[in-house]
Image (cartoon, rainbow, N blue to C red):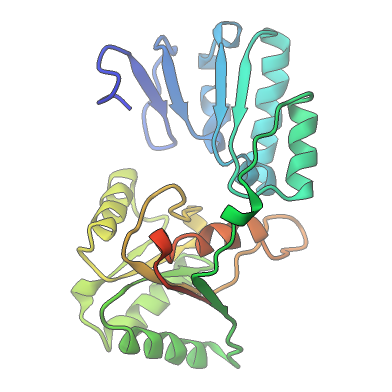
Amino acid sequence: MSSHLPHTRITYAISSETLPELFETSIIIATIDVYQSYRKLLDLSRLQILVLDEIDTMIIREDYRDNLLNLFENLSANSSTCQILAYSSTLSEQIRNFTNELIPNSILIKQKIDKQNLNNIEQFYAHCQDRNRKNQFVNLIVEHFQQTQILVFCLNDQITEDLYENLIAATDKTRIKRLTTKNNTQERISLIENFRLSTFRIFLISAQTAATLHGIDLDHVNIVINYNMPQSLGSCFDLDYVTYHQRLDRCGRYDQHGYLVS
């Protein structure tokens, strides 16, 4: 954004960065997960436009949703003229109803239904009796598809590390990388960029990082593997359909043939 707006001052707020004493720039880019750490640095009475990207994820995740509600509560108390733009890759009835409560009388712009079909992506579910069988199945996919990039999503850091150790025993270590909460922001950015540039072939991602790579174009990814199905953060640990859809969208870009294996 700075490269396109060289004369506009921009600030960003994320968990690993030292925050300023007060935001004085025209544009602020921030993540909702650390809203409590910077909310007192915002003068919401001066806020004219609020952009909420991936509002579906903010609603589904309980910790994000609490911060989102707190933001709107503070906003309503301090600003009556702020324009709100909310973007979502999925629009279930639950998300639409929740958004309507947050932003009443809003104008809805939807993509045509015939543009939403993913006919070029095939989805498969494989039932594995135990972890060992699951590892064997992943190894089989990795060995069979030698010329394509593969994304693998795991439930947590430990499972990601275990699968990584299992894979490097049979595959060139330089072709496999993993992303966990142990990686700092710069390492995370570097890993994603190198994967996008096809520097390595197999990318394991821990769900604890909350990374789905949504919004990042990955031209050569044809296979996405849900080593663990995505789970909601509520008390029931139901299937997280929003995250599933976002992972699905990582493969088969630009009408290429893609496979999602869970």
